[in-house]
Length: 71
Image (tube, rainbow, N blue to C red; front, side, top):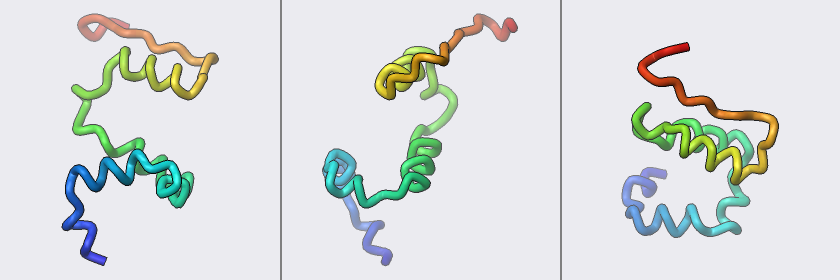
């Protein structure tokens, strides 16, 4: 089971881009990956969230960007 430590970046990306292999993941697996794959808060931006909402055809949500911590 420790073979996953030997997977290269290229192999990981090949798996990630393989729809047949991805179909083996459960919805919970997918949520776990989605929620943990980014490195930190600096990876999350309005642009990224807008793209995610668009990619998933989510039309009932909007992302607002606050400047300098204003609310």
